[in-house]
Length: 609
Image 1 (cartoon, helix red, strand yellow):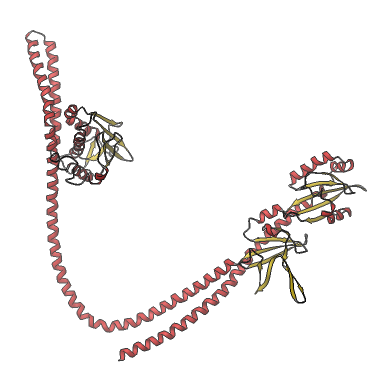
Image 2 (cartoon, helix red, strand yellow):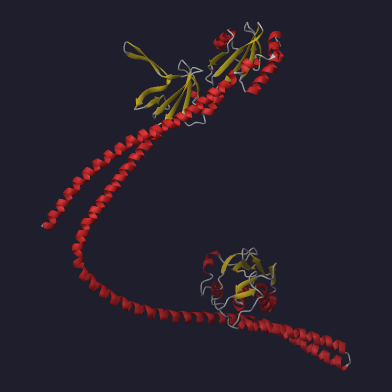
């Protein structure tokens, strides 16, 4: 009963604490969102103000560069002469040079009565051809002896232009005017590199330059006309709504940019009587403030969770302390029982380890016996051919011996010596074959020593030479560097190659032109031995099983299926690789990869037994 009341009291306290914590976490998240929104908005304003200052200064410098050009050109004598003598062709050339060197859109010379003497543009793009009404204010100021300047909006929605006009005078004589027109397209192209939206508006609130082509010629603010207190009409503008949030001026732009709010920042250009306005997207500010609120909420949840876990852990700890005394006795009894079981298991494991070590030794001995049996079986298959190889020199020895006896009896000792020399050569050949057979039949050691590959290949070719002759097999050895050595054992490597050679000869019994190619090459500190034939090859469906013990593709009674398995195990013991692939000759190709020790070893040594 006492335990039940304690649990109910703990549940009531937990429920009240959970509700209180949830309200507290929401209040903290809301406060953090408000404060972070103000912080990020202020940061956005600072960055946007810096961007606006740079872009506005660029606009002023761009126009100021061309402001000084007309007064300076008006002092040139050649321009005075062009206006005085109406030199149209020369004026065109000079205007083209000035426009090309300064980057101005148009340069033209004009008489006091308004007649155009020359212009670098002669098509519809020339403002001079439109008439003086398009730049009347600038021309009026120039007639008064001042520098005339005027903004000219495009008629087809293109970039606006700015015209500078200066009077051309010499003494009291007035010869006319020189005008330079520059396009604001270059300014708009520079503004296009900014991610913010920029507009330059004149004193009438008309957009004269912007990085949004659809805003050209629009009003900055949309205007609504009312009649009798009701809205009767609306004129489009860049800004649809404007309001203030603390110290920040926010606007809602006209479609299609009305999906988010923008921060509006202005900078006056007193010389031009313009102002440049920047609209900074506030969607990222809102996202950042939401993320800050989520982080604050998450921190509250994590902190509350940690506090809750600490309280819960303390409650459970007290409960566990009460139960530990009950479990202590039981645990001690289980420990003693488990100790006895582990002791028995350790004794069983020790006995099993000894049995497995004995079994492994028996397996190694059995494997060595299988290798030796395979070698003897291979020698048995070659016995008929080797007997023929021995009988041929024995018959020749007998013939040369009888010839030598006859030659000696007849006193022809010189010719008898030649016959005796041939006998010695044939005896040495038989001794070499016997020595190779003796080395091949002995058991292999386990140590890895440097072995010259060319020597082992030569032994195999000598042992299988008689059988190759009988079958008419054409053997080919490709080895550029005959000094290559591998870390192996002479007897074990010879056993592998002999096994591959025997398999190749068995596979080519029905081949009309049997062919074997042995290639030895060096690749990245390894020696690669490729053993290829032009037999039928290995079917694709059994390639994965050719290295399994007792697996064979030969007819019943022709093989036990241990040759490739033993060869694979030998190469694995030599820390190498043996795998199968399709041969370029059309048959099978077995590839042996062993470690190259040609550079680190001395003279090749045979494996000790």
